Amino acid sequence: MADLPLNEPAGVLVKTTCVDYPGLVAGSFFLRGCNLRCPYCYNVDLVTGKSTEGLNTVQELFDLMEKRQGILKGIVISGGEALLNPYTPIIIKKAKELNYKVKLDTNGTLPVKLQSLIDNEELKPDFIAMDLKTSPERYAKSLCPVFSKYVDNDQHWKKLVEDTAKLVATYPSDCREWRTVLVPGLVTKEDIEKMAEVLPADASWQFAQFMNKGCLDPAYNEIYPYTDQEAKELVEYAKTFIKGAELR
Image (cartoon, rainbow, N blue to C red; front, side, top):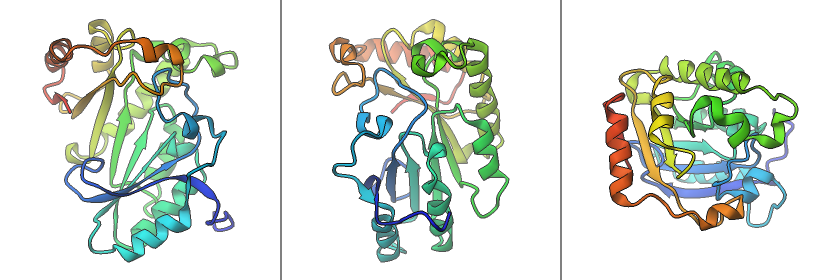
């Protein structure tokens, strides 16, 4: 880990956020690389890793953490998919050395990698946010068709999501959450029912409206988001399974 260069473009640095780490003023770092290709994703350059234009270095993040120690309380490591990036453990270790709380955002498909962090006290995140994108059995065809030719098995991806959700559920209820973007066609009442099955009863399930701009699949730029009333009805339906469901 120590041999990785700290002065090369690695991600997007957000110096201050009051919304990414519940209850804390934090800095966020969005790392490159992802194993999914969600058609509605707007972090296209981060996901594909094809461009380094405008990216910050890990050293810039470290400089920020040292300069704002005592002002910022948390560091959020996101992506892309942070569990795939070799800088993630380096960032976690540095943040903990500086007494920051660490929140990890994950797409929920890499339970083995997540387990390895949880099992290491030096690298264990303090808070985990897991994306829950649609019915677990729909991941293969709807979210990662590029990779499904290698593992063309709906149940394979479903198990990855379920196993990750179980790991996240081992955290105290105030140190974890699940997040779902209300994408028409990907998140319906039927999908919500399927997603709810993998969550603990006391889950914090945070929903957000879909934004039809800059999507990885240009066709999704032409899809209208749910109306406010439709979104409210879907979240109310989610509440019938998980009381902690809310529209953020």
